[in-house]
Structure formats: structure tokens, C-alpha cells
Image (cartoon, rainbow, N blue to C red; front, top):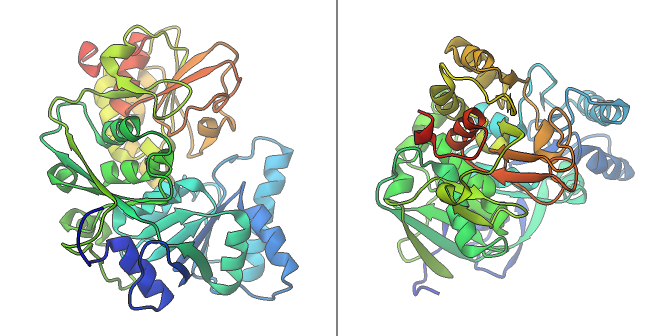
Length: 424
């Protein structure tokens, strides 16, 4: 534990939301929620609970977001029924931020893109990867569906204030090493419970130069280390991203120079190779050279972790003029309609189709073993998604490896896991 009497960004945001002067780790606080999110899997449960309250209104129809993204476009009757629950609730209670198929995207890419995420705010979502929004200097965390129901009713949620671990990244990122590699290396070092109920502060010279897409990827996977949230303190990269998107006022919040951290963990990234998480866990991480020669049946580029425009550009750079290996299925899933449209305008989708990849409408789809890319027994997939537990993408005897879009694209061409330099 570092010495000092200052507060971290998360402690300050929670104190402000609770209307108290100071919040210290271990305090239980009731906090005003700025945004409450649900999707087609979790929101129907929350809506069922909400209906038990017998209320004729939600706490604020402007502060609730409903995104049908997991099993949509509807994969079967049950999925259609789930999505219909959201649609009818949105209509009944005047929920402004309801995103139908054709306008929606994968929720954790969509909300920042639509300007709904602001620094200094409290965001909860009935989805564990809600921690993504810490990349924009918010306190954002996943909650259960019953907590979401209560928040939709009264606009509050309760938390135990977490301690914070600070992660500092020094050096210069080598070619083909990205935010995905940084977070995989971090989880590989500390384990899937290494930051359990901790806030993860990502900092240092490497983070200061990292793109917003890279930061969103890192914060997205904080939960894979057990983190309560992950965050990057706002800076010029943040403000440039917010410009033209966010119309509501906001106040950026920063950790004090003498903030108290449980631990400071340092990385020198200068010699880092692209990272691969082997089955069956995101912390089973090795360098790409240690994964060489693993034969693949499927490659997935997309998800709330790596389906953004920067990810698609990197993949297209590698795939241009190449063909996907005859044994491999390559699925490319832009994370939102806007990203899809941008990729279309930039000619990226043509690159993918000419390489013989299948390009999908925005959906979580295969990431959770939902649809549009389920694995059979014995099959191996390399994916830019965030989890690779047993059965995550289909059959319990299939295997999922995790990587960056660069490694995924190169490996789709090679048919085995390779460093991008081997294909370029």
C-alpha cells in the first residue's frame, strides 16, 4: 500500500455520486447512477423484477439504455421473445436510448460511439464488460439484473468502494503489439482473480500514447482479471474522442498525486511479443512464438473487445491481397452500424470479402457461443474476443485461443497461429 492521503479517480467519482466528502476503500455507498444499461439476455430479467414494483414510470427515461445485441438478429423463437420484451418496455416507458437491429451495435462499442459515456460519471450495466467505459474516465461496472431493476426504478446503486491497483506501462510498443496484447500480458501476470474487486488504473507513457480504441480494449478486459472496473484518466486523446459526440456537460476527474494504491505493477513493453491466451482461461497467456503451429478451424475478428474501426483496419492491412487458408473459416463482425459503414467506405469490407471472409452485421454472436459461428467438438478457434472458457464458443470439447486482430488476421491466412510478420 502506497503512502498518502489522496484519493483515486474511482474514489472521487463514488464520493461525488454518494454526496459525501470522501469515500475510502471498504466504505459502503449509495450512489446516483448516470446511466443504466441492459441487453437482450439480462434486461428481460430486470424488466420482470421491475414490473413487480408496480411503478408507472422509470427513474429517468433518458438515463436507461437497452441494446439487443447478444442473440440478434434473432437466432430463434426464444431470442425473438427476449428481444420483444425490451422493445415493449422501451415503448411503454419512453426509453429514448433503445437501439433496434439496423441501428444498434455491440453495446460496449455503441455507447461510447453515441456519446453516452462521459468522464466523471457512474455507469452500471447488466453485463460484466460494462467496465469498458472506464477508458473514458467514468466509473463503470457490471451488476446483476436485480440491481439493474432497482436502478431503473430509483436511479441508485450501492457499492463497496474498491481499493485500486495502478498498472504502469513503460517503453515503446513494438510493431503489431496493441492494447489487446497489453491487457492479455497483464492478466497473464496477475491471474483471473489478481484484481478481484479492485479498480485497475492503467497509466504510464505507453497508455498516454495509446489510441482510444486500444484503451477501450484494455478496460473491457479488466473483468477478466476480476477487476471491479478498469480506467484511464482523461487526457487530450479522451477529449478529442468526446468532441462532437458528447453534448451533455461533464467534469473530468483525476487521481491525486498522493492517492493510495494497494500496489503498483510495472511493465516494460519494449520487447513484448503479441500475446496469446491459451484455453481454458484468459490468464493462460504465452507469446505468439510459443503458439506457433497450432492449427485452426475458425478465426473471429470482432466483439466488444476488438470490433472497432482500428481493429478492422489492422486486419485489412494484413488480409489485403491474401486468401484465408482453405481449412479456415474467418468471420469479421464490425461492432456497430457506424463502424460497418465506415469500413465499407474505406474499402475494408471488400478486402475481407475478397480474402474469402464472411462479414456479419453487428452482433455478439459467436463470442458467447450465441450464434453465427458455433464450434463443433474438437475444433479450434482463434478469436479477438475476451473469454475462452470451456464451451464458451460452442462444444465443450472445442478450444478458443485469444489474440489481437493482427495475429487473428495473419493466422487466418496461415491456417495456424503465427506472428503477423510471417504473413506480411
